[in-house]
Length: 273
Ligand code: ADP
Image (cartoon, rainbow, N blue to C red; front, side, top):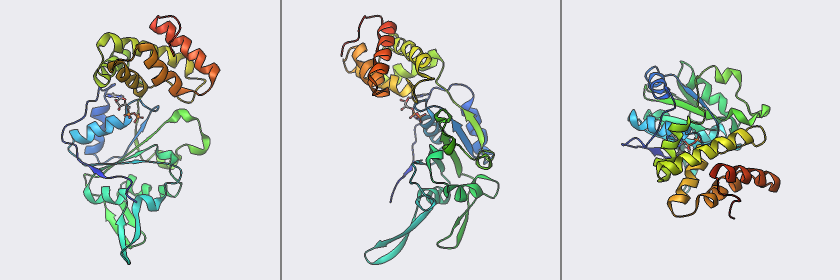
């Protein structure tokens, strides 16, 4: 199963920093320390890691974790190819061999048995033991473990174990400050600054309203998606309705409340549907 290929990106993709996170990443990389990035969905965690990998000229292996993801999925397994049994490295083993940055997105989703392979890599042993072949790999200096999770889910069954989290240097990202986010929405969405500013104001109003009630809120990602629809010619209200309101909820009452915020923030009366 090839879940993740090794990405070599020469030119860093656009990333607007929220604070000192680029310096922190560089220092952690230099000191061979693993990094835990916390933050809500769509706030730029993945883009940040892609940007830093390219900036440090390191290959990047990304794995989106899910509740079926096991240690064997990460380490590798034997496959039958044309009647022969062949060992096939998983993304973790590949990243260790190549001295890559391994990014485990939403790491708390993965099965508990993955901690057994992650712990020795995340502390100063920096080793990966491959049980099936009896091989023990020592990670080269270029290898860096980066994991992310969304603490907002409030799911006690799916929080990070203290013994895991204390192996990592932690970085908390939120949604960027308004002027930074407007720059992101303008650049990524391809809209003029005034449109980007309107969408960011809308995002902020929605966040005030939704943070307690909804699992997800108007993320930078959703604002960028709305901006792209506008750049393509859709009117702003329709774009906000499709990319933000209807993307966030299936509940009619909640959708109506959100649509009111959209109308008020964009100042055009009732949203068109
Ligand atoms: P996360 O990994 O936190 O869920 P992503 O990194 O995938 O979020 O961000 C979603 C999208 O939002 C990106 O594809 C990009 O268009 C935009 N984005 C968010 N934050 C930034 C940022 N700081 N700089 C540039 N683009 C950003």
